Length: 226
Image (cartoon, rainbow, N blue to C red; front, side):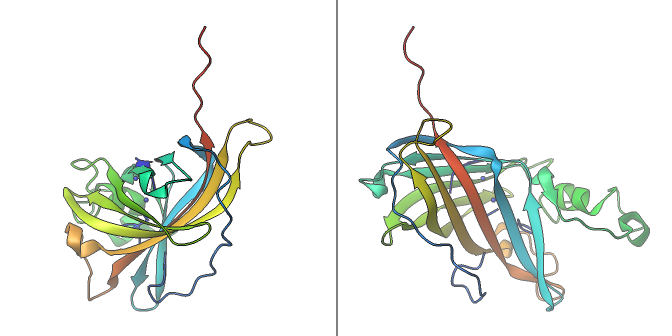
């Protein structure tokens, strides 16, 4: 999916279990009614969550609050469509309630979120301020479903990532904005060690990261000439 700022990891554990062995209720797919054009993410109706297995007990979730997705849509020729995502890793949130400073005496960070965002073993945002995803191929998988393959770039490395995309809503004209609108969900899985983020792999954290995006988009329409 999009221009990210792409997106949850210990890393996204930043793009959920799409047929990768984790059970998840699939969103119902709908036909594309939105017209061709450029679409921008609605910042008030979107989420990006990642999960990574913790202590071989349960997936641990991370969510991100600052990311952007842009979409070029051609419903009559989906292969001509594209998406870019940009994710700000400093926006990671875990809702961790423990005493991080008390249990990490030598840490230079004030919180678990700060350690994830800035720590050299994690996102290292001071050196790598963005995580991005740029699609390279969009394939139809039937009505309202697509497979989007692209390049995920993080920590100075780029690896391929395939996302299963489901169109969850689509309008030729939104009743309020009067422009085309659509919503979709996207899920995918990758190995964080391929990007050099291998802390805890095989010990207390899993290597596989799953990511799920849900969001609404509105068509960008140029204003009429003066």
